[in-house]
Image (cartoon, rainbow, N blue to C red; front, side):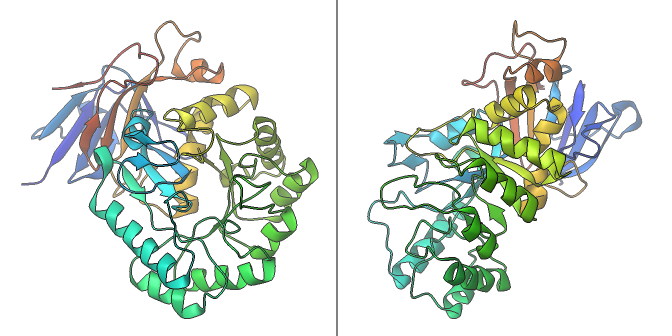
Length: 387
């Protein structure tokens, strides 16, 4: 028997698509964890639900995506000596995380055999274990001198689909990095690059020239992680690159707004994606993606429904995921949220554009309710209910 999820009485339906960020409808149906249809419940077959949710007029959006995290193993980070950071992030509306390298693993191997082994193991353990239901795309090796094309083929054949931040290892020149990024791309492995000043002792400066020469798929933390590049280099990257412009919470807020405004002037807002770059020295930010949405909307003068697209649909398209958009056949990963109690603004979108966080009332992953009232966001005005 098919698992049928019916979510009725939706007050506002966000799509994740910048071109049409708001959809008509008050009902969502998913079959066996995949989006089936949406629209008005009066016109839909809502019978036979195995799970039924009354949204009580709150907003439904595709689950948020954190494009830049540094997981290690399970739901634990040695960087901050913290347990359950992934579960806490789920309570911030994030349903998918993407690793930019498991660089905080104590004793991380830097020899070619060891780094390949760790990448494959990382990919496997998060494929086999979802902390609180969270989807964690991990197994992102940091490239090191001595790697050859066959190494990338071997990792790809084993299921590795990501590179960790280029520049965090010994490869710090554009020519070598480009060759390895090209090998990775040949075998279907997506790449990202550290951008800006050193993040921790042992890392180094990656400037605009190296970013452009390397040609990764994602410009990791274009607003610095933590130290940003000079303004002219950020503008140059926005002008020169077709890669994703990743703006992170653990970066320079002023540089984030510069990247946003430059992308808007160039008609490249569809290239903006969001991450936290945590866990890191700044800690873990369970609400980091929501905070970035509110910050970019309020200080960057972006409609809230568009800013949410930076956190789901844009990332889905840039990262080639099957989640983050309201599309038939896509994963039924949702966040249900409402204007926070006593927050200013006439509705949730106005409130977010004034810089306020919404209250998360529920997350759903693959059609399964994974969390209810958030323990981390401000309390929502209204809450969805599993019937």
